Length: 411
Image 1 (cartoon, helix red, strand yellow):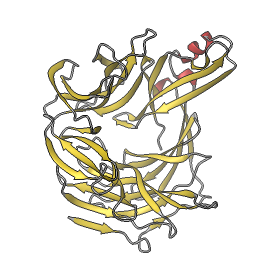
Image 2 (cartoon, rainbow, N blue to C red; image 1 turned 180 degrees about the vertical axis):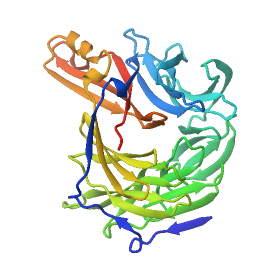
Image 3 (cartoon, helix red, strand yellow; image 1 turned 120 degrees about the horizontal axis):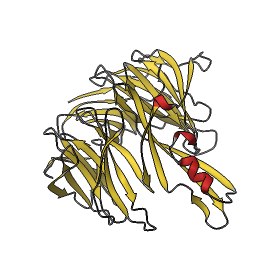
Image 4 (cartoon, rainbow, N blue to C red; image 1 turned 90 degrees about the vertical axis):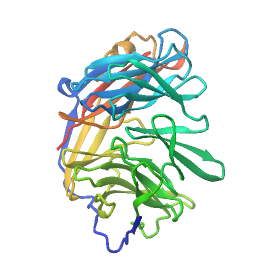
């Protein structure tokens, strides 16, 4: 196992000046950049995986359209043009029933994780046209499902004052590896998903909470390599890699977040960077990411030989989302912006018009993760409208929740 610890004094830092003149390309969604993927009654939907033929698998839940709070778990397959290929309802409707994870196994079978009304979890198997194969197994009750990849299912549990524990299961439910740590071995982290590898980013709980990138060998608890980063700021007290993606050359791009003392006692402020690594986890460069009009770096993705950072707000609900673009060598290319309106979501404005005597109306946009496709980088999105009236108080106006796929404007 190879461990690399970087020396901040010798690393090439590309801290970008606030006055840098950027190209800003604003993108307002239009018919050519939006695909309607359906409305779901009091429902929710999220990206699961891209299938080998390019189709998209999504999962979630919805109610049956009555006043009942019971929900059906649903599985939705989209064609490569983002039209709905098929939709499968997986249950007769019990509270909190939903699909949380899914992947396509090496033999072509779809495997998904389903929750039922008491938070029991089980794995179900389907053909690629949505037919249940009859095979299933239960996930141990004390474990939380985290990631599904063709070669493994990752689950974890917390254990009070003891270290968290992570398990890797095969698709028959057998434990193939076990280690201390929450997703990250000897640390707290997240997995770069969709690559069928154990590339983990987060921080090292054994080393003063420095940011760390780690790769495990195959499907095991053996560390192939790991990189522990020195603090970029001399007065930083904690750091982590908050999001990461694999780049076209097999390397990695990650959001590096550090906490430094704030202006008030016992308060901290965040500092954000884009960090670039090669395929062996060696740090190549960092670039400073300043706040943009109250929005903070939240996600990173790689597409078409470029790296993009998405900005969002931790407290407000914006309708415009900036993307900051870099090439893989660290040169900043400029910014684009995605703007969404209620009119972009089928049926949403009509639902609001039907409501009577609304004294206040507020809309909320929710975005999923970016999905690279042959014709662009696409983003699942939904919007709901909430209002206030005398009869219902503060309530959700649209019972049917519309979902769209929107193409991100790129440079």
